[in-house]
Length: 59
Image (tube, rainbow, N blue to C red; front, side, top):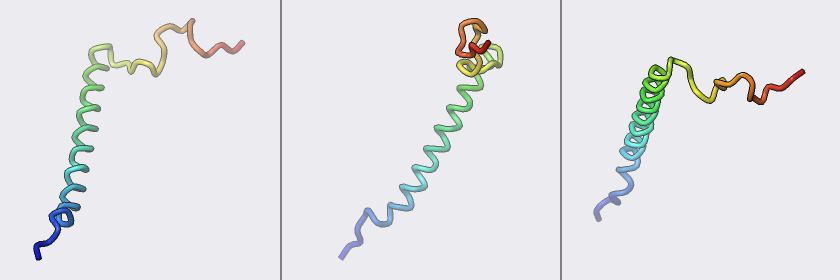
């Protein structure tokens, strides 16, 4: 009559998944910040470097 080993591991799984998600998000933020600092603290693909060949053709 041993308890199912999957039942008590559900909260542990939730904690592990939450920790992994937080770690991944922190790593992504740190890597993005480092890349932005290397490129000149300007996030790429947000504002195109070429002001002429953009999708903002109004006028």
